Image 1 (tube, rainbow, N blue to C red):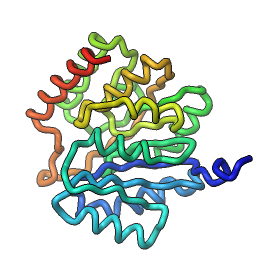
Image 2: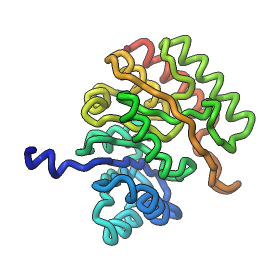
Image 3: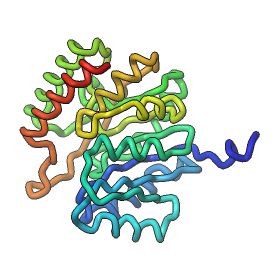
Image 4: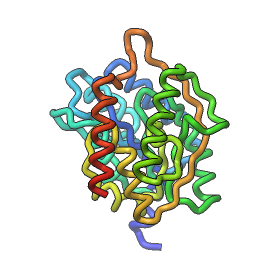
Length: 243
């Protein structure tokens, strides 16, 4: 075995973050506690997507306590898709996951995702709110929105997955990095672009149930606005025209 393979990490967790100064420090150590028992040689890459608060400083504070926590940071907000792409392309591991930094989706679920990915031989495992075994605490309106978007994606891309947008996905790193290198969408529709390009490249995708427990209070509401939903629809059509 070569030195590079011996030193290569088992799992990279990419966490995009925008103005998360109040939660990012504690959430990073929640992720560490959730994954270190099964991930062994891991790293967590936080991508600070141009936050205007102290997110960067809070990540650096966490890094002082755990050097497995790494930071990619830039001054201008460029969008979740851009942030995830930067993190995934920086990964040097057998598997790479991305996880929303608010931890509505607990990181301990990655153990089951890893097991299923290896058992199935698939290249990508994605969480699905629409899976019959998912345990979610979402409003009826959010569930309806997910279903409508699923029908749109199915019609446009012939992609046989029910939910492209859940913020917990796991990839075989060497298979997915070329896909991310081709990606161009920087905002919330990046998920569908990645999955559509992966599907076109012949990568196998499996959907798995998830546990979702939204933690944002009435003050910290979901960051997805009506305007952003409209942008997602426009971007989705653009993706269809470009792939």
